[in-house]
Length: 258
Image (cartoon, rainbow, N blue to C red):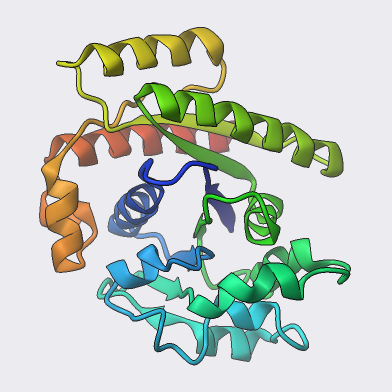
């Protein structure tokens, strides 16, 4: 079971879109996928038509009381409308986790421990993390084998990326194995100088990490979210889906080399 986390300390860069699009492409290829929503805002949960304000069971259960066993974990999972994609939803209770975690040991490994109990149930796990370096993002980083960092191709997002890279370096000091990561340029508009310059800067500053796939501005992503569909089910030939398909091919090729 491969675990990929999607994170950035800046919001609005396309994290949830990255999760749902890759999940849809993996599921379309026959893989069993678990989408995990660790963001208290619950965008991924809402995408699949579940209300994070109303859920009685959610990812919060991973952090409360005894660690859930396999059966209890499976009871937390919700349908997504796609037979090969399950959802471990968020809830607003996750927003209280930071203060609850103070002074408690091992809170940064709860998600990794839970996912080990689901080994064999899924082929891929995609984790959507909040845009804040705290216990939830630390769990996302600790649980994954590869990190995906969507970066909006505009100046402020590029500056925010510096914080994320420092956070990765900090996490790597605590890991036994270095966390490899890929930068995914998003919201790219080749008609604007801002996008063109930002993409050029990413290639200059992070030549080894930047993905060769560039995700363009594509209204089909918005249309898919309105219908609660993974984008590849709405329009498999759209420019945005094609970019993520290219990204996925590179990730799978990297996986074969590991």
